[in-house]
View 1 (cartoon, rainbow, N blue to C red):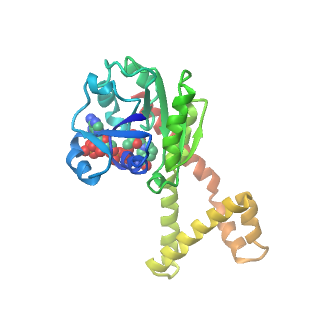
View 2 (tube, rainbow, N blue to C red):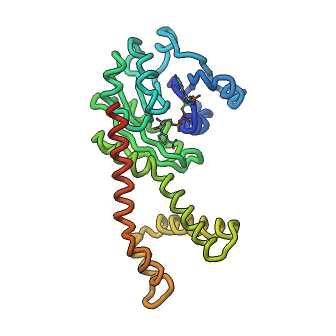
View 3 (cartoon, rainbow, N blue to C red):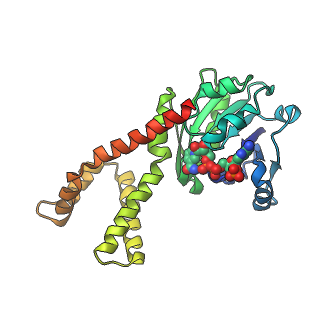
Length: 270
Ligand SMILES: NC(=O)c1ccc[n+]([C@@H]2O[C@H](COP(=O)([O-])OP(=O)(O)OC[C@H]3O[C@@H](n4cnc5c(N)ncnc54)[C@H](OP(=O)(O)O)[C@@H]3O)[C@@H](O)[C@H]2O)c1
């Protein structure tokens, strides 16, 4: 049985907890002092314990995995509360906090030895997410499996060797749902501008995006080849794509990723 302590149970913490809660070989304890009553009510009758303050030394000794899921802006304050604790042997310090490096946990928690950074994304809410992970060198195979078993429940898992890849992944898959929603919003607004209702626009746009992504996944072709398949010479798609390409979408996406990557790197420095 692996005992997990989740520190922070907001949007992402609760998405993870909801996917994990029925696991037979794990138990869950949550510390989120400001939302203690609300969370207790929400998870009423589920096998999860709630603490209304940071656990003490005796309590911390029971946990095999401690996962920090608070905002980067308060990470230092929260993580420092665990500074002098002695943890159970081979226990894992995990973090989904954007930007905060493995060295941040090493510096702020004296006895941390096995550390893993995880970057999940919002579709974890429906178990369709992707989590990118990187651990420090001495992370055991057993712990890798324990962590992977948890995150695979909210979607795909991708392990990296190099920590900078996590900040890059934060800019792509971590923040990615935000870009996709922005693009969907642009599709919908333009569809309304051309004369469709909000309702019809939503139906057309969402089905088109979902269908295209699923098709691409199924037939395993490059997006450019698929676009060329539809864009027959002299046809409507070709006319549309010509206009779209004038604004150089790959450059726009690259600049978008770069801005998010820079921000992730900056958050790591604070
Ligand atoms: N949301 C995403 O899509 C996403 C994706 C990937 C990674 N992440 C990362 O996940 C982390 C959490 O993001 P989120 O969107 O879930 O934020 P969030 O909704 O604000 O959740 C953080 C939770 O931590 C609580 N908290 C505050 N102080 C605490 C303390 N001392 N001890 C324990 N809990 C405390 C907050 O309570 P109050 O709200 O009352 O302060 C809140 O419930 C961030 O670092 C973010 O970078 C998020």
